[in-house]
Image 1 (cartoon, rainbow, N blue to C red):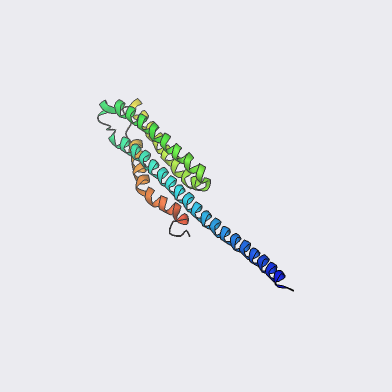
Image 2 (cartoon, rainbow, N blue to C red):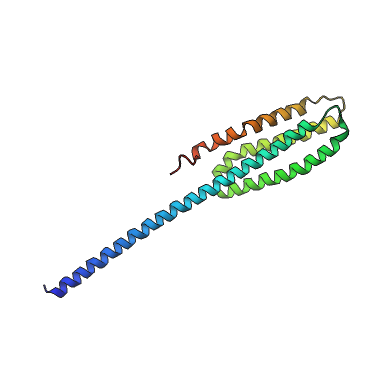
Length: 177
């Protein structure tokens, strides 16, 4: 074989090696991009989950404050308190449901984790409405049901941070790679 053949073989081997190297570089870059994208999605999902948790807390706090503010012995301000609560609770409920839909669009499994908390927050608000309506309609009725809603809302909001931490523990940022 003469020098031209060796040069041609060397060129072919060099070209093939260059293609293999380029393929490996592209694969490495793609893997970096996928990891970066996964981290961004993870971060955005956690932010959406935190936003939903915050809105749930605001909603339940509003219910708790309303049930605390209603004074059984002074019914003069009930109408205004009830009106203000209804306006605020409808605004907060819309915010909770909006945050829930946003989270569902990002991660349906994580939305499922939060669904019981959303349902409980809504139930507390509905119970508060019913308790005040019952007291408004019957002046002889005691405020036990209203106090129970207040107690349950206080318990819910007190336990909410730990509940959120426990629910998200499996998906903790500390444990992710």
